[in-house]
Length: 455
Image (cartoon, rainbow, N blue to C red; front, side, top):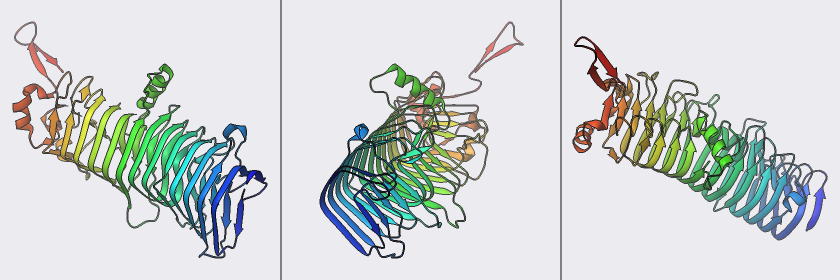
């Protein structure tokens, strides 16, 4: 089928009150719908057991030569049906009046995407570029993405939007998939308001924002009327080139600098009462204000995170009562931070306002090496007198870190230092200059009764 357009819904297939539908081995060229479902629109609300199977389909549009209209540019599923899309190839979707919403999922519908390759997509509106979910009856849709690739994604929205998913009640499972060469004006990678997200063996490579704005890889809103916290799981997730400027283009570098100075430019934003588990995470060539923005009663558990060549305005891990809050609990173990850069304490920054409250931050068997501070604290900077009560380092390794003062740690005073289990052995290995406090030195000045404090 080619050169077709539907004035309403379903550029190729428009299904109502379906029990079972299957389509295989179809090629579709330059075909769309003005409203919903460029390939297929499904609305079988009267039958909760509806099943749709689509396999071995090639869907190619002509990008800017022929605009793509409507929402749910590939699929709109507004029923309670289950849809299965496999061995699908799509490319050339240019949406001048919408965010594309390649897969527009509503209410309690389910969609499973397997062995799919989608390339060259541009959206221009609010919402999700790839996945967009809404619920009118407080129920949750389900979407599974397995063994799939999404490349050359561009989101030109001037309002908040998301590249992978924009959800208001969605259970998302993404496994063994790749997202690469992504550009945006004002986009998160994932926006999740109620629901859950599991990512396993997922790579996100070369993400570049075009404007200074609040940017998050993932944003999660608070739970509403829920007894238990949501549990989000990330396993084998790789992010390479987040706001990197590989060619040192002046315009790119200027945008990058503005982006890093925005205190809400973080990799992961978690509102109150969420629990995150992150295992086997790789982050390379990233430029952010800090890694996490985490609210009250949040818990982040990290195991085996590898961060390399990362530049932060305020350290990889930042603790602060200031808004935006960074006040939850973190447990990080068996992780490596290599070649990280910041003004003070490239690995950990503890703000003056941090006091003793019910959260705990623990680092266990974490290695920080080759980190560079422009000023103080080669790995750690603390100005809070309560840091020792909140933060601990157990059996952690510090190697070849540099700073003007305190090649490992610089703090307001001894109480401001986090607990470090092997501090004595670190001093024996690296000398007294590895730890520094304020004041750093006392000098006599103009007589015996005058002191000059150097800090």
